[in-house]
Length: 434
Image (cartoon, one colour):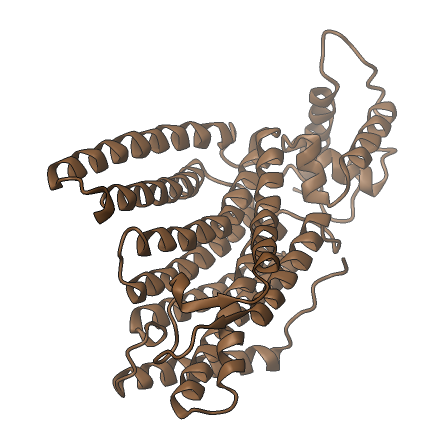
């Protein structure tokens, strides 16, 4: 896949203006007595804040030199604003009985899906170098595009309804149900692809590379957690009997919060020199969010009227589930944070200066591979950051070892010896420039 197209400056301004108008329109509809969840100030302002956070992150990502991640964060901002614009259009069209009402509702009902993919693309791009995108990005874009189109064409609001329907299952019907179910499964699997790939690369790496890739993996995990929250709302509706409008507003807040979390992770990963405290906050935040979903879902089922449990029994069971799941998540995320934390607080300066090949005889690409290896990356981690296959990484490493004269030795590790050579040359370059 070629480099991501940049949103022109005029387009960014137009998106910002359209988003501002949409927010004002939705709040005005609320004041006029339209009480559907889509006009709730909490959800509207949360989405606006999420879009603003993405715009800020886009600027800072570009400033640290990661233009690809910055561009993707810009598109995430635009997608969240588009969701607000479509919501305003849908409310107006339904209220006015306009002929475009069905089209507006269909577009609005699918506009929440693209931001999920853009969250993952932004977090993942933060650790990449070069203009190429990995195959996982291409698969994700194709799958989410297919799901969005299928949802828009196959899912319609149950009529008649007053205002816009909530996300409660009974508010919608799907034409050709098997196709809709397949599209949903495709979307869920696609959203697992990027985080699984990144977590594998992170846990196989060492040092600062492990921390940076782990931060990006946590940012990509926010999207499937958001989908889990959406599914949890269905459980909360039945058997939990939770008010659909309240659950729908909570979903909008979750979508905005996940966007902010993903872009924040992208910014941390792109800057390099990840700190122990940052790793702990990100990993614990991700793990505890997942634990909270598990506790809420289990608690909703336990408290369902159909089970006919007494208040004391419900309180005891919910407390026990919270203690077990919450305690396990706290301990597990603490251990994971320690695993991901680099031994050296800041590994800045390990990379060679731009335009220089620090070790005589290596090609520029081999120097890049050696630089990432020196950060502690595994073959999967190197492949993730340089956007090449692991087979290509293995070939580069074999060539590097030969050129550096590093023959297999039972007593020493060639990766460690190559790293030591890189560090020595990088230090010499810094001394020469000083």
